[in-house]
Image 1 (cartoon, rainbow, N blue to C red):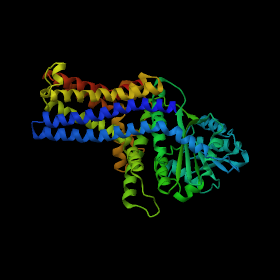
Image 2 (cartoon, rainbow, N blue to C red):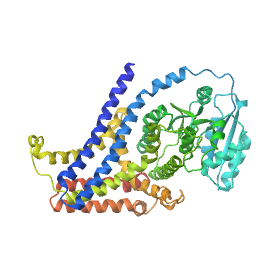
Image 3 (cartoon, rainbow, N blue to C red):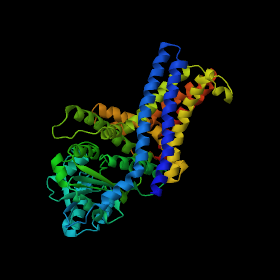
Length: 520
């Protein structure tokens, strides 16, 4: 109990930071409307800023709520575990690994490691789901599977992507449960099945997701690992309390009968999120276990991260459209969503879209604010608390909003991962990925294929690195250059606050070029 009180108290401090971020953002918007707007155009700009601040505030408050609520998940899970009984029999399990032109050595090493899982071997079937288009890769994996007693399934096309490969297996598989691992995930805890299967004594339980993490690597890859760590340590537990924990595609196990009832995996680029939603709509339960059973290969280059984030944002945008269509059309067999679960799904779909598009919109609106609004006058600290100087006081509050937005991830990372540098790096990565994520959202909205040319290209290396990097980060670099020039203009007309604001934004968007150049 003392530990729970300590955790909840610490998290309340972070909640206060997010609430202040919301109040200061909205307060600055009101300042623009009541004190800074001297024309119709400025009123329009101020109103836009208010809308953006309100939307941002909603996400900030809900994120803070989820973060605080996650402190109580261990207590909830302990009660669920206490009510779980040992297995009376060993159900059959299919362990599947979908692959697509992957490194053969990694596939073989990690598949053989999965075969050491602690479970009666006669109750296990291993599947290698090979969608590879490379003939040599197919031959090598087919040979490996035959020699290792693994069922090898190959498709001549990639219809439905990973979901299609899994559905192809489901049409042949008769096992009671399906455990899924990605090709780069190395099993580190062989009790995966013995730990997870007893929970399925609850006949309404559809799936269990465990915590996903990467092996240690470089400073860059370890920071990228924090992207997932924030989700799995804070968001997943909170969602699990609402029965909306997301199946994350691997390091998880699913009841075959639940998949049959749902109709298999929805064939989208992020099939796991769609499946999680359909499972919930079909009145199934889900469970999240905050324990790592396998580690994935670290993301060592910025290009790898870009491709991952492109896929996530493309898929999340698809899901958001799917969610609204599903909500509008309804289904007689589907349950009515609670308000919290509805917000969970909306915020998940909007998540990366919100972070990225909002950053760009805030930046654009800020340009108009700087060149339309008056410059704050020079006043003393004592005058700031006097009523006649309230306009300047609120303007300073607006500046503090930006400062606090930096402090929040730094404080979180320091508290939970003992690193200030990684917290600031997380802040920079969100800016560096904002254009990439936004383009992915646009591509998904237009129905363009997920392998669209915006996401292509391997790691940058070899001669001509600067020009290659410039081509890869052209939009962000051009945007940054314009902001630098506008910052210089603001300085020339003695708008020092505005100049500092724009130059800071310019430096943040330039991080895309820097990361491509430094990390490949």
